[in-house]
Amino acid sequence: MATSENSVIEETQLTVASKPKRLKWTERMNSDLLECKRKAVILTPSENPPTLCSGTKKGYMTDMKELWDDMGYAEIGLSSQNLRDQAARVKRTLGNVKDTVRANVGCGKGERCKGK
Image: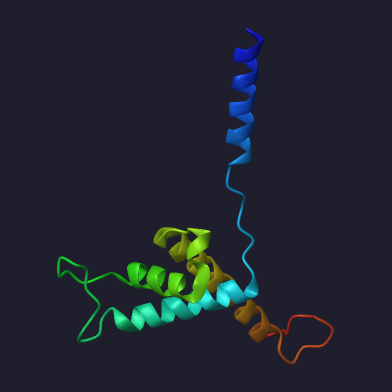
């Protein structure tokens, strides 16, 4: 029975060891992702949009994924949905930063401007 227990422990260790780690997004990765999204959104509604083998138009998420993979990030293995979600998070965060900066421009010592 000891060998049976050992194999179960080894399988468990392999499963735990092969669990994917959380991806740490760098500024460069986020910048590249937003650039891919910008290009994909421009390509999608164009007169000659990219098409699938069946002849149907590709969506911007598919185009964004292909551009992302072409930039050398294919080995990370993110899905088009993961990329869309991250692009939305980055865009939302950048929007919040812009609003904060805009609200505080001209104010000293980090205080909010009154009346703005």
